[in-house]
Image: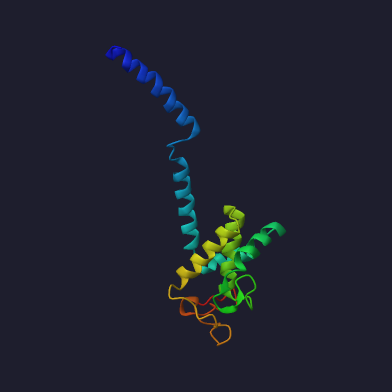
Length: 163
């Protein structure tokens, strides 16, 4: 076998192999790029002001199926302001609760997230809001009118958000 023949054999073997890999998507960086873009959108959403998240709660109506996703996502999370309740059944409609409800609604309706993803992102948002954590008793100790970043509920009136 001459050098020229070996080169032709390699070329005729490698070219179809590369074509097959391209068709199957092996080595394709698009899913990673798409995931990074989605991660960027979620990061932007998590950084929105509490006022915008509260507005989402008021604006977005969930279908019964979407409400079930919200329930499944928020029930395992203790409410930061009243930890004897879940984030789904917070003891009141405080601004902090309205914010995580709005966040969950937009994650479900605009980003198609399921219960596990919504739960993870709401937990991330709560952690980012107050990295040192919440005492879990602000509703019972008179801190409803204290900003959430100071372990409060950010008020009770969505038109008067304490920040």
